[in-house]
Image 1 (cartoon, rainbow, N blue to C red):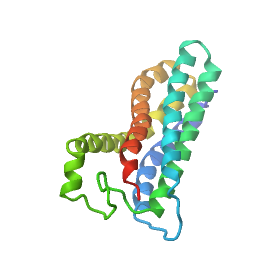
Image 2: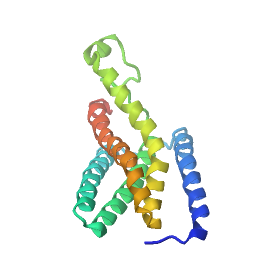
Image 3: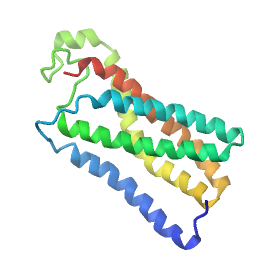
Length: 189
C-alpha cells in the first residue's frame, strides 16, 4: 500500500473532518428520539463487537510481531470495520431507547436511596470506566486513523511510534465497552 504525496494533504484533512464530525454527529443524534422502534437487542451485540475488536487487536499485534504483515493488515482493517458497525449499532440503539441509569433497578429513571445503597461505591468505578471510555473513544479516532495512514504511506517508523499510543487506547476503549455493558445490563428495562 502506498499513498502518493499529492493526496496526503487531502487525506489528512479528511481524517481531521471525520475526527471532529463523528463525535458531533453522535452528540446530535443522541438528541433525536425515534419512537415505536425496538432495538433493545443491540447492546449485547455491540458489546460483543467491542469484545471481538479487543481480541482482534491483540491478534493483529501478534501477527505483526510474527512477521505476518498481510494478516496484520487484514486484522486491523477488520477492527476498523467492526468499530464502524459498533458505532452504527450504538447510535441506532440510543436514538430509539431511553437512557439507562446505573443502579436504577426499578426502571423509573432515578436512582433512589435504597438503589444507591445497593450499588454503593461500585458506581464510582462504573462512572470512571464510562467517562474514560467515552472520552478516549473520541480521542482514539484521529490517533487510529493517522496511525493507519502512516502504514498506508509506507512510513513504518512513524506508524510504529503512533501505534504505541493508538494500540493501548483502542484496546482500552474496546475492552471497557464490554465491561461497561456488563455493569449496566442488569438495569436495562
